[in-house]
Length: 262
Image (tube, rainbow, N blue to C red):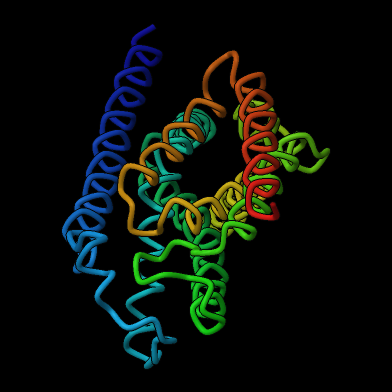
């Protein structure tokens, strides 16, 4: 009985540490987005910038990659918190109290973040391509009504695809994920984090394209997408909410496309 109580005490301590760490990292990521140069620049001042393709230096590309990586961290880490917490709990129960579970949890989170950093590389490349083809404004939002409508429709349609539904099921079922994909040791922690990150990217990557519609530097738009992702993955009605949004995006995009072509 005393051993069980001791394990429960250790588990509560582990969970507190993980929750605090996740909160700190998420807050720091959001703070960077709020305070970074360019977020405070309003659309009126941006309108004065010449409509010409921006020259991308290595430094500028690195800054954009950092912005995308931290944006993904700020948006996705809250929705991954239940999985990370459960991984820590299961790891503690499967190991002795002397094992450094914090290190394993950190490695799991590292694998998750690593996958989203890979997505950030792709998003940075997409941003560069849109800017070079004059399809992205200085506010980092597409100025093409046709492209915006197509992105809306694609994001809406993707909500109903088998790939989306399969990835969402893995994201919404931490217990099932851990039972099916458990790996031992530090290497296993990284591999599991990367696998979970891959399912998460598969679930949300098309939705992230909406950032190019509302504006990559539009904090309200970023927060709205992050809130939707969190609700879709954690609320009992999350899948239904996703389908409702899908229908709404398709209708919104179709109406916009019709208006642009008339």
